[in-house]
Length: 150
Image 1 (tube, rainbow, N blue to C red):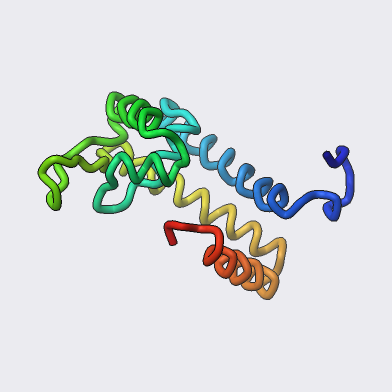
Image 2 (tube, rainbow, N blue to C red; image 1 turned 90 degrees about the horizontal axis):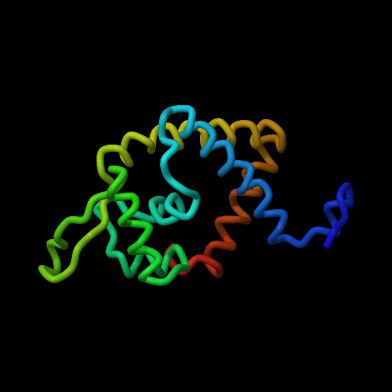
């Protein structure tokens, strides 16, 4: 474990990727809370952010969020009670249901998107255009071998 103040060379790449992600996540949560969306947890948000525009089956949400189906179901139940998501019939399979964003979930999206844009603009300004493009290109390339949902 690197000590406080240690060179970034001592930190592994995974941690170097996680630190800016977590900083962005913290800013998004703060902005959402300030806008009145303060009644969901980080675990709920991580499930909610994986809901596709046309809805997503619970089993797919659980897999994408890397939680058990029971955990995903519990989180979706909580999100449903607070108005962020709703379950609807799956038009491709009458036995299945889709989890979709509800009105409150849809209302929270622009708040989060504005913060993402603000953070990315700050990172771009800090790195400069050339390094920003290189970073995005490298991370996009890594997605080919790291993201089973790409």
